[in-house]
Length: 386
Ligand code: GDP
Ligand code: MN
Image (cartoon, rainbow, N blue to C red; front, side, top):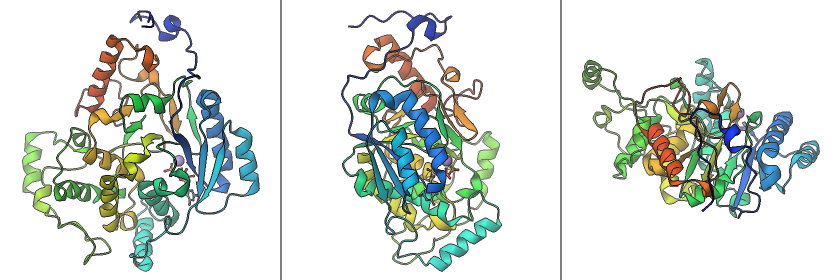
C-alpha cells in the first residue's frame, strides 16, 4: 500500500503533503461537462472554461456539451473551441424540451408568471428563466447529445474554481458508489417555492416511500415544543391544484397529513453538480419530475431546478449516495465554498486511492456531520445551509 505521511493537526496540509500530482493516467469515466448558455453569455462562459481548464481539465480532457434553446453563433463557437482542451458538441434544444408543454394553457401560465413579476419575486416574471428551470429539472438529461454519457458535471457562466482538482471526481464517485455530488447548500427564497414541499412529500406518500435518511435534511424542525404545538393547531390551507386538475395525475393531497413537515428551504446549489445521468433517467426520478411538473409549479410558482433535484434526492436517495466535494474551492456570484473553512480542515486532499483507513474514517465522520439535522453551526461555513 502507498505510504501516506502522517498529517500534523498543527500544520497546513500543503507543507506536509506538498502539491499533489494530477492523476492523469487513471481510467476515465463516461462523462461530460454540460453548459447551458446564450450567445450573450460568451464572456462568462470563457471565464468558467478558463477556470475549469486551468484547475482540472487540462489534465483530464473531459468533453463539453453546449446546449441552447437558440442557435450558437460562429463567434461563440470559435471562442469556446479556443479555450477547450477536449471535444465540444453543440446542441439545440427542441421546443418539446423548452417552453410550455402542450397540456398547459400558455395564457394561464403567462398570467401566473406576470403575477410573480408584479410581486417582485426573483426571476419570477421572467418567462425564459422558468423554462430554464424546468429544462434543468426534467429535460436536459433526455437530450440526444447526453444519451451516450453516464455522468455529467454542470458548468455555468461566471463561476470560479480556486483549487487544483488533481483527481477525477467521476471515477471517485463511481468507486464510492455515489449518485449526486454538491459543493454548496443554501436556503431557497421562500416566495419562489411556496408549495413545492407539499407536492414532494405527496410524492413520497403516494408512492409509499419512507426516508432513507436524507429527507430530514430538508425538513424544518420546530425550534421549541410550544411552536410545534401551535403548528399542529393551525389549519393548513389546501394546496393549489395547479393549472390542471382533472386527469392531471395529481395525487389527492390531504393537508392534514402535511402537519409537522415543513420545508426548511435547504437545497444543493445546482449551478455546480456532478451527478449520475442514469439516476436522472430512472423511472423514479422521472415520476417525481412528472408529478411536480403536472402541479404547474414551474409556472404558477418559480420552482428552481436546485430544490427539485434536492427534494428528489431527499425522496429517493440516502446520505451515502451523496458526495460533498468539501475539497473544491468554488464560487458563483456572491456565494462561495472555501475548503479551508470546511469542517475537519486539516484533512489532506489526498486522492481516494491513497487514503488510509484513518482518512476514510474521518471522511465518513464528515459525511455524517453534514447529513445530520440540526448540528452546531461552527463558523457558519462548510456544507451547512447558510
Ligand atoms: P442564476 O445562476 O440563477 O442567476 O441563473 P443564470 O442566469 O446563471 O441561468 C442558469 C443557467 O441557465 C446558466 O447556465 C445560463 O446560461 C442558462 N440560461 C438561463 N436562461 C437561459 C435561456 O433563456 N437560454 C439559454 N440557452 N440558457 C439560459
Ligand atoms: Mn448562474
